[in-house]
Length: 486
Image (tube, rainbow, N blue to C red; front, side, top):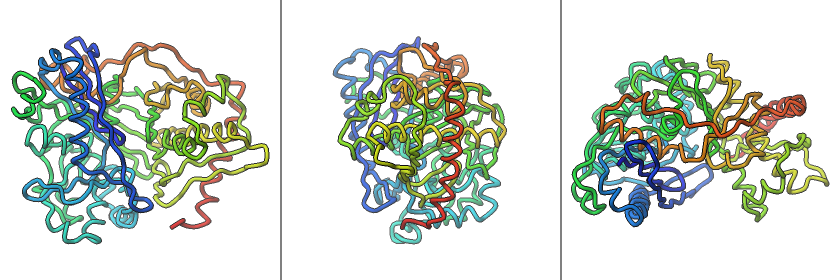
């Protein structure tokens, strides 16, 4: 048996698979996000441990014999979070999360130094880890002076699981400290933020062994022996392993809290000015590109909170048949935007409202706004040399057929639906645990799921969608011209 642990923003998912990669069971532990100020987003690392304990306890209650047979554990996690530890591994402050934009001034200053884009292949985004440390150095110097280790969220879990300070390439590529082409820490970039390699975890590949489960935890969970813990992956690379998106040209679209358009690459293909991320993949000698929007299902959840209707009820009101865009446009920039704008202070908007703009019309606009934001990502990936002929849909938002039809039509490419099953980050993490424990061939393990169906672009609405996308594109500079909101 192999265990995948995925540390997300809203919870931890634990999944058990057997040696044939059949899912035995899964369980969850819940998490909340603290937003003490506008643009801030934090979590207490102790809550990750609690949520992991909850998830594993849920598995143990239903599958004690299978849990006892675990030989490998894989980790996946939300990327970019700055978990700061002192010399005794005590947490110095709440972790600053991936969707926290407070460090936009520091990010711009680092990005103005040409060596960051040259070595990392990426813009220094406010959500990345390095500018967060620059912000802490400026605003919380007493805490910065005590920093002995900086860990990404899943690697803090690894420290708790194994006692080891270890990270891997895919997650570390999102820090702005990794030489992404050479797959190693850059002492030059670390020095630019007042740090050195001693404060970083050891780097391994996602398929390699990165410690063993501590005996106390193994005994508590009823696991016999000492399972190896794989290097693992950042959440998107882990999802790619779960989806089999590991060979050049394969792609998926993820509708989670954030939205991601992800394409696997057989070579390192940076184009930072496009705001496309060029990161290491979880498998050795592979890379990937992705465009990221900060609010995907988060946009629908916001609309749900405002209207008092559940997301499922809101999308059900739309029906099954894709509608012509109404003329109401939604910009989903609720916490800024990453690809293609790299703008931490832009905020969302409804444009084109009229008396007839019902709740259904606004819901339609929210889904279309996210679809057009993903289209922006497609155009950015094309500019960076990646052509995508079709995508597979994953994430909670992919349960809405209407939304997928909107995305297919906005992108102009077919959207494949994986066969029943859970092929996300927890499954990908479990696969990495299997590879690390057995030495199996990564490509042979990370195969794509069967396709259960395909949603084609609605050609009858292609022209209307193209017109609506052009309106959407024109609105960002208009909104930006009004100036920062805070």
